[in-house]
Image 1 (cartoon, each protein chain N blue to C red):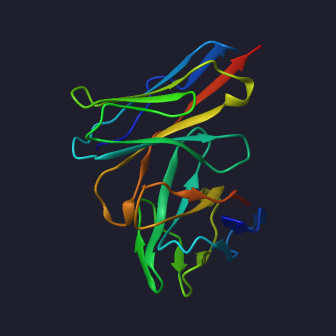
Image 2 (cartoon, each protein chain N blue to C red; image 1 turned 90 degrees about the vertical axis):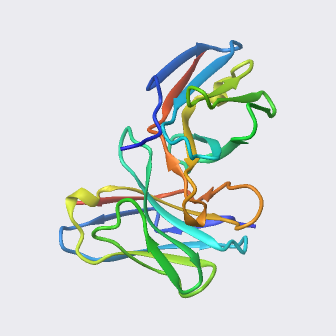
Length: 113
Length: 113
């Protein structure tokens, strides 16, 4: 099993450009999450999903949109990138049963110039 | 607002010594806590968890202690090794949907030779 994968690993954007980050998990998890991590800080929840076709806002949702058309995929979109969105983005997934553990992907380092 | 926080941002220990990483939380409704380890350039990795109905849980070389009276959580690592050098985060579930976790800002553990 690959676990949680993220593409791309790195990306540089200019202000105003758009992009989509892709997260995929092969553990048949119901819940999926997008976080951002800024230097010296913990992870902050952007959006999350409790199942296919459903999404909800987290702590810092402004400037981002998400979609979960398939259970195994969770997409994070930036419609008009801003320098404040320079960060490392992590995707995670979790089962609705058992431990509350979230399994994390390797991250995407995004720089907005 | 309520937050999960850490007492010390950095901790240096000699190889072979025991490490203790502390975490304070302020939400008395939190019922589940997790410790994560994050190595440089990687996503967070689960270490150990504990439910609020417990005060101690042991894993391989790690022990988590929970003191609900003072809302304090600690991670003890026995016989610290160079591979333990990483940032350690505590996270709590405050009862939100989708098993959401709120992360602290992290402690950088450095193991000295």
